[in-house]
Image (cartoon, rainbow, N blue to C red):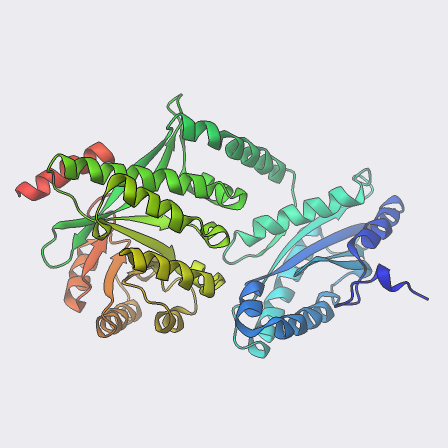
Length: 436
C-alpha cells in the first residue's frame, strides 16, 4: 500500500522529497541513456485563481498533470513542487533524439496544450514555461537537487521570454546567476552613494508640439563611470523586491526636483513615475507618497503614477485598491503599455484610469500598416468617449506623428522628439520650450 503522505493530495503525484529520492537512484544508474528533467509552470495561473476561483484553478492543475505526464520519454517519476510548479524525470535512449530535438518537441507539445487549455479555461492566456536539464554518463556526478535546480533555472529564463518559453539548460546560465547576485547585492551601496539618476523623457502635445509633461526613468551609473542598463537591472531587482527602494528613490528625486523649481519660480510640467508590480504585495506606497506630499508640498496635479497593463492583469483587485488610494490623494493614473496584453478593453471598463499609453507595438518600424492605423484610431476614439486622455509612446517618425494628430491622439512620446535625458538637459529644454 502506498503511503498517502508520500503523494500530493490534489494531483496524486509524488511529493517533491520523494521525487528527489527516486531521481537520485536513477542518476546513479544512468548508463548509456540520458535522464531529462522537465520543470514547468503555468504562466498567468494566478489570474485564473484570482478571477475564477480556486475550484477552477484546482481543476486546471489536475488537467495539466494529465497532459504533463504525456512526455516523449519514459517517465521515471514526477512531482508537484508547489502551486503550479511541476517537475518530471524521463529516460531517453542515448541514440535517440538529440537534446535540442527533444527541447523542440516539448516546445511543440506545449503549444498544442496551450491551445487546448485556453479553449477549455475561459479563453485565458495560459502559457507553459518549461526548463529542461539533461544528465548522461558524463554528468552523473550531479546530485538530484542540482539537476532539478538547473532545469528550474532554465524555466526561469523561459519565463522571461515572450514566445519561445521552453529552454534547455546550459552552463552559461550560471554566469547569469553570478551577475544577478552581483547586481542585487550592489543595490544598497548604489542607493546610499546616489549612483541612480533620474532621466526625463518629454511628453509632447500633439496639436501644438509643446512640451507638456515627462516620464521619469531611472538610470544607473556606477562611481567608476560605467553604466548598468535598465534592461539588465530592472528585472533582477523586481525579482528580489529591491525595486521598491529604487522606486521610492525616484519618487523622492522627482518630488525634490519639482519642489525646487516651484520655489525658484521656474516652469514645471507634470512628471509621471512608474509603479512596479511588487508594490501591490506590500501597499506601503500610499503611506510613502503621502509623506512626500507633506514634506515637499508639491501639488498632486504635477505627479502621475503609471501602472503597466500586466500589473492590472495579475492582480486587478489590489491594483484597483491602489488606484483608489492615489486618486483620493488627488493624483492621476495612467495605464502603461496599453494593448500589449489581452484584456485591455475589459480592464478599461473596470478601472478608473485617467490616461492610457498606447504600447509602442502599434508603431512598428518602417511604414505604418493599415491594420495598426485602424486599431490606433479606434482606441483613441474609445478613450475620448470614456473621457480618458490618450498618449502614444514609441513615436519615431514624422509619419507617425502626423497620423496621431490626424486621429486625435492628445499626447505623444518617443525618440522622434527626445530620448530620455538627464535632469540638467531636461531643465534647459523646459526653459527653451517656454521661450519659443
